[in-house]
Length: 292
Image 1 (cartoon, rainbow, N blue to C red):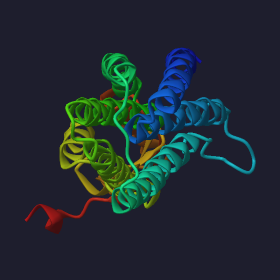
Image 2: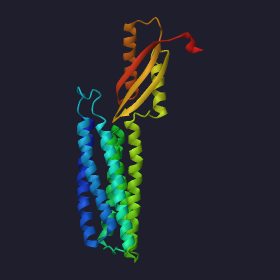
Image 3: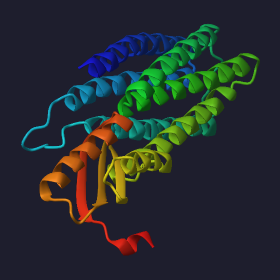
Image 4: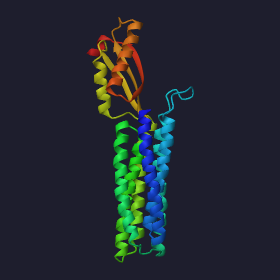
């Protein structure tokens, strides 16, 4: 519950910030006629929507296991992260098309000075949101918060592009407004695309980093009576990790001894990696030829 409350508190803070930025950017883009600020406003709006999704995902992920979902609901965070990533790609494609169309038709304007100020405010605000959300997301290992953090960072970068576009447009080069909109679109597509493939790996139960496997294997082998470890598999399940492995023990060990030993191994695994919630251990007799 503490993890859920921490993530929810950060999400509510960033949601309010994104709503304020969206309204300000949208008003200024209408008043100044800046396409790049309008694209930045849409990006902030998508940030607000993604934060709502994060809150929903966290609420679902916090539900205990039930008959239909015996492994729990933690993967709701991963699903939310994927939706956010796809949103970034789609928004980027939409604004890229709009900007190219504006350049083709010569339909661009010189933005007002207020467009510069809102871009500066957005850069600072979104970078603070990124740092805050990323650090907590990393600490509590939340895929949804991490995705939302990168959404904040991409918004900060797009605001930098907006600032450059408005600045050069006001210097007498109005084409920079739609030109930098294309840069913003490219950033959105790149960040979203990279996130999609990371999330696909998790949904396909990809093996975690070799370092984690090595640390867990060493921890298991330190348990007395465990001769070897085979088929050690670890995959992420939302903010959790699930572990499957085979341990070999003395053929003389009885069923009761094997049962207690597997529980000891499970405890050692959870001590080494606190996010492990499910461990499946298969016990096999150790053969002498395995040592040769």
